[in-house]
Image (tube, rainbow, N blue to C red):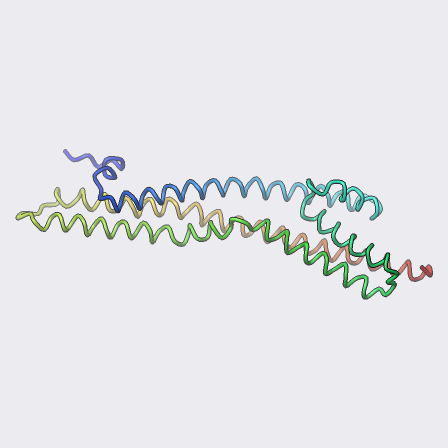
Length: 229
């Protein structure tokens, strides 16, 4: 009786099919590692952003928040670093005796936008890898299947009588490659879609913060101008 377990099928498969399956298994391992790293990374980003947002609206002065953000630069979250970049540029322009509110706000906004882009590039790291795994893995598995079927039928060409019992093992071992390809692709696609939604929410939250902080700076500039500073 033929052994149709996956391990036995792979052991009897051609070297090309075995190589394809090995590559897909390695890709799947790297994909899962990236998924777990991204889960931890996004969770940390959300927690740090929420913590800083609570501090920001707690009533502390901008200077106190900026001093804390400067001291906590290495452990700060994206929102805190964006705030620090905007505040730093604002203070530099004030030190240059620039009193024009338009120039002050434009400088602060540009600094925060540049910081936002850097933060989003970091948050989105490894996301393209998951997209590639999800889109390419099924085709790699299909290649292994096609090659395995060709190899199986080539071996049967020398036989005078071909039965289902002789064809089935070769076809089955070839189809394993497609199954492994889907095994690698499906989690990557699901994770990519989930992470994309989570990252969009983070981006929207950071965009909203930039607008809110810009309004606060605008009022601060207005009050200083009114006071004759």
